[in-house]
Length: 276
Image 1 (cartoon, one colour):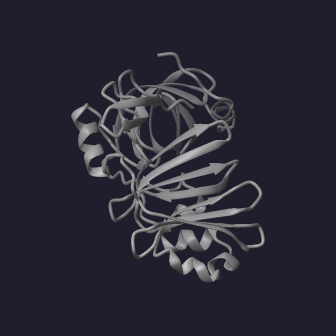
Image 2 (cartoon, one colour; image 1 turned 90 degrees about the vertical axis):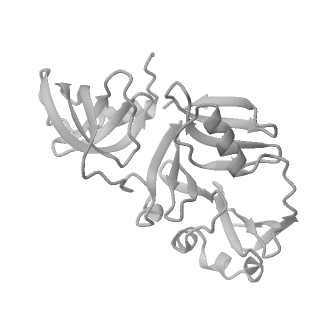
């Protein structure tokens, strides 16, 4: 498969430590996967950050995974001939935005899209969280139905928004979105199951409120997961229900990390491979 590296990936590779061997040589290293670019990854080792190409047909570990690698090293790159998950491996969250660290998130995945980085991670209660950053700024956080962690709400919502009287109508907050102008959108569910979305301007003043009954015709999360598994998808993560479709992060039967969409009958109507 042809390797495609975006400007972001190339910049990251060029920014690696220069204290590296200048000639190709056999090497055995241990480190933590910090970033993934297509079929290559940045590994943080005791000798600096190295751009690693995994062995052919090997699965790329999720960001935060500690690995042992061996292969041919040439400066700040390494073509691996063997890759194993370290015995004491435990998912780490050092690759996440600061507001999402320390939450016990695991199975961390990410993908880059121009200046945006999307993160997907499993929460301690088993649910999934999705986040998006732009130029390092955390601009959106969403769960697949569970309450957003209180520390995330505190970190993202200004005091004037948290003190808004009508915010208490949202009994279960599932999404916060901050646009480039500083306007904030908060979404979640009321005690009676109604979905609520509130918009606040840059000063924290409430600008709009929408309430709607959840009458989506898309598959349930459980049914969509079962359908994807039956189709050969694995490592199924964050799932987002729309009006008549459901989107999921998963690995397809060919071993590619993808975002896949099912229509309301359970048919795959779109699949997009993660390209960085």
